[in-house]
Length: 209
Ligand code: ATP
Image (tube, rainbow, N blue to C red; front, side, top):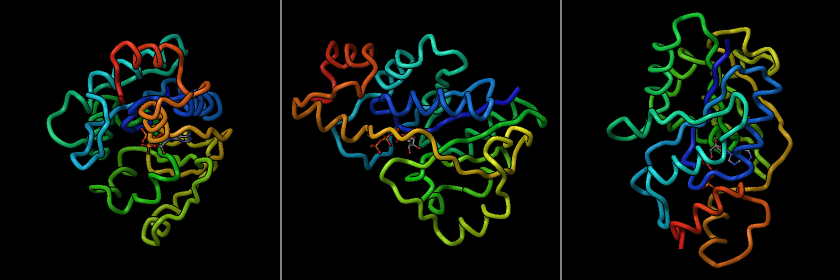
């Protein structure tokens, strides 16, 4: 068994999230990969969607995809979402020997030095950074110094239960939630950027207007 999670706001979930999750699971051999929507940081610009809407949309987008799902533990927790707490909880639930991997995009990795107790992420889990289309991966020097010695091939990361680090280039997907919200607000077409069920849900509940 090899468990993995992708953290994010998923406001809303889009095709890039879903396709990356499917490819990651297949290539890295996770038995389970969950998307974990976080509480929205207080400084976020509106328009945005409530936690319950984000959760429903994430569930709609992943329904029927083998081994990919949604974990709502950060939304059930009081206060801000710290990945370190989430991974500590999961480690406790999975036991010491099960492989656990946290996946983040290159844009998130570039800010890792500002995350609460970021080094502890490696105590509880492996960390995989997926390159993001159009984003240059430029981690802080202290993050580089900490992660490079832990580096392994992404394809072998599940051999370790925690402490490993890998980077992976997936098939590039141009979607971003910020651009999805902008287009919805401007009434511009989205093409195939959103799973159909998510777009229907957004229209039905008049979100992001
Ligand atoms: P925003 O545009 O508002 O920053 P987002 O599209 O990045 O939103 P998040 O919920 O922040 O959505 O993304 C969750 C995780 O998925 C992050 O680690 C992010 O880097 C990654 N991610 C999002 N979209 C893509 C994409 N198109 N390709 C690769 N990774 C992505």
